[in-house]
Image (cartoon, rainbow, N blue to C red; front, top):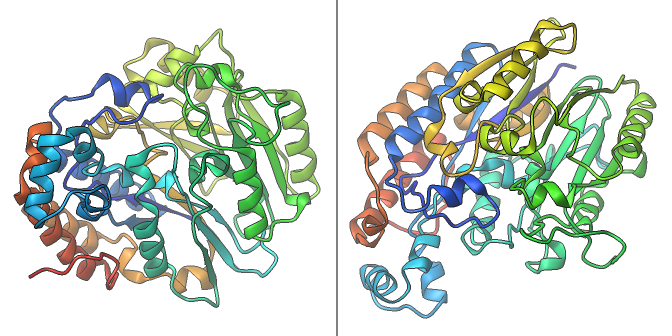
Length: 448
């Protein structure tokens, strides 16, 4: 049976803004308070989805969330009508309003962790929503994320869903941004690679000193248990604390894997040789041939990697067995990175081609091509069971483009977040989107 990797890209929401909310994310913090363009952001993302679809890759869409999140503000003591809540928050606690207005659910790499059916004990595709409890503005996402996932992957014959892990620091979980999977073929049993920043209960593991380590070993282990993964198909690795302190807030900012290939910076992990040997051994026992493509610090320093988002790229398998790397425009603008990529693709390694996309709006908020997408390996029968409304087609692209043009603003500043009309616009847009994507009642609001 054929199997595919489907990329479900987050559709940027109508409140896309630069709140500078993500401590440890250099791009997010450095662009704090800049004026954003939600319409351009959404269209840039849709443009990438369309391009990959036209290249023959399976492509899906992941819906944004309702913002401003008035329910979250009410839970913090603001009261009255929706407009009253927004006005009170703007006057008394603007940082909270900014947090509750974030369009951060666009980063679907953080939405959940996915294990394909070939790896799981019960032969179903498993999803665990990420609790994202390191940052308040992200910690409020997982209830809606779970509902959206449930509407996209609704057939319990093929799909199993798990609630987010306990919302405490010991089980900090940032989803697929710290998880990848290696396999000979997408339908074959693979090796799931979990990367953590610290251990909550074992003091033998070091921790970063400047920025928080968002993913714990204990969270990784819990997800593996929930998904029914056997020890022979799991590898755990610790992210190098020194690179976290340089702005590598997720593993997908310093490495990316696909198929049998790991593309990584030489400073990405602790005990790198041991990690690579374990990946090689376990993938070999499952019929694969592990290939590690190491980027030396002498060619690309960590600072260049962080500012260009070289590793926050999509590594995609082509029909001829070679791989295509999807990178943001910022890679072409960095001389060290661009020189390295030209050298990489001129050789005989697995990565043979690079394609560049302009994703400036999302890049300025701290996320590139890989942050925007959730990868789901699906067998043909499983793909047929996915809600067809979320699978990209030329017709859906045209519909969503018109939807964005109709509902989105082309300018949004911090002061605009205090406008209660923004909430009305967002709800009106999302009400229409649920019909377009056939999602049903995934949002808690009801339009009057």
